[in-house]
Length: 326
Image (cartoon, rainbow, N blue to C red; front, side, top):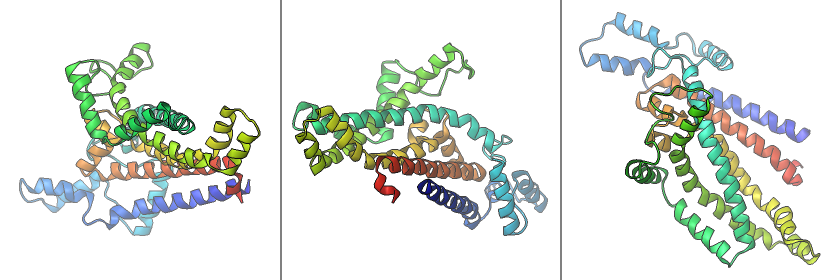
């Protein structure tokens, strides 16, 4: 319990630091959000002070002392109020994030978990059967696919399976005539649209999990306690899973925690290629259009997600390796 409380205290302290930094960074940047809008208006002619004041009021440019802004900002974070988006005005930032987040969590999240599970199991098998075709085939395949960039793989799948073969839709998360609901027809349509982006992430990330687990597993198999377990006549599956894999998975678990925390940020390049309406695509639009409230909310959400994932991994570490609780 003391171990969990210590990690929880560290999580809260780090989260406060991240929230404070997210408050300071936009204010340390030159100019203000209104300056971008005024620059566009200035191309058509001079902008009057009244017009400038109206734009600043419309965009919700903060006023008052830095401390009062900070207190107001903390209250807005607690109530999940991040203002109005400049790109999708007058929609609120919270509503935009709420509508985009489920698409990313379902598609990117499930694929990330699936890639980790498959890659870990295949890596264990490759290490246990090293020197055979069960080792050579996954190792060569993982090395080959992990060298492909996300966007390049996405473009290949989009061209051959989308435009040439016409097996899958080329953009969007559902058909143009459909509306989101929980009916079977819509879920099948959404799954059909998600296959290409999901396949892109799976192909490009699977090799890294296989190679990482295999290399760590081989080093673990050389430890004395594994040799001792084999000498005692334990079954091969028991030695591989309960003795070797349990300790070899610890470094991969750290990487999985970071990957799982990054799921909330979406897969920006993949979602951009397929015009998939997830958080990554939303972040791309925010950066392109200098949408500061939307960027600030997304960056904070991604940071908190990574911190939460690391906290969960630390707790799992404590159960898998009791030495970390000391």
